[in-house]
Image 1 (cartoon, rainbow, N blue to C red):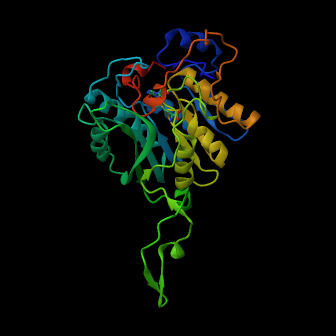
Image 2: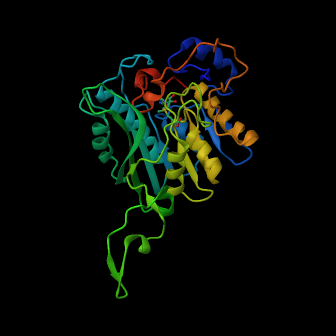
Image 3: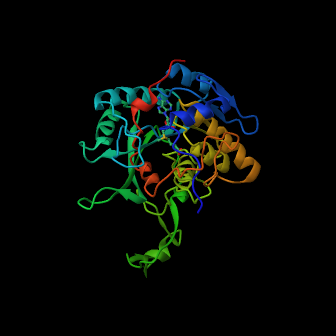
Length: 348
Ligand SMILES: C[S@@+](CC[C@H](N)C(=O)[O-])C[C@H]1O[C@@H](n2cnc3c(N)ncnc32)[C@H](O)[C@@H]1O
């Protein structure tokens, strides 16, 4: 049976140290793409000077940010590390949101992926939503929920399958509504209205035969190890389809898009495929390297990921053992070790 060969990198110090010598970037370094002008860096998103260096005075039309969520899931496949306090998490978040605002154009969009701990007052989602009001240049536009196929929970609660996405705008950026249409055909008829003296039915009046995603996205497959786009070792990879929806809706051709929590490089790949430029970074050199490799692999093979094969084929770290149990990708909803202690900003 096919298996994913690489364990979660974040929770496996022996694997991280085996991979590190194969990574091109060290903290503070920036890789410049000579083909399309993307930049991939190993930087701390809260370090505004480092981010300014990455931007080199350019401004962005769109930021797609997917920070660690300060959540822990009691899951056998998880590395259970502690969470930081909500207060510390908010203080940390203020810094990366501030650094992001600094690099946005006057008319720009900001999307933030987040999670809510249903056993702890729905932190950090609730707290972040309130904290974001301090950034008065940002206006709230939508609160999107993406439905994951697989969830977590007990038999005594509703299965947790939601993934939250906050959408803010600065100024008046364009919104390409065509990007909102799903592949799902309209099947319900109704909503009659008189047009030019004729009674018309909803589907006759509408622009598309498919339904709009709206702010509850149910049409996106959660990434798992049998999908081509899967990047082994990345526990919190977002689906390319969701990211491409955001990039298509809120940026135009050749626009500059930023993502300071690159991980598997999904925003970068979406930008490459859609003809945008992307400046992206991760505090962890292994994830910065994976992002570079994912771009290179796409250009060489047209493949969007490695499915269940390792992105570091040159490193042998005993990947014969099964790396992911049936519950593995559950952390995508609320990553167990996706907390601040994992990624304390290293010194530049
Ligand atoms: C939830 S993942 C992002 C997933 C990404 N959207 C994808 O599709 O692959 C969060 C990432 O943020 C990185 N990270 C954590 N703290 C950071 C910081 N202070 N600065 C930059 N990156 C950070 C982690 O290493 C991790 O790769």
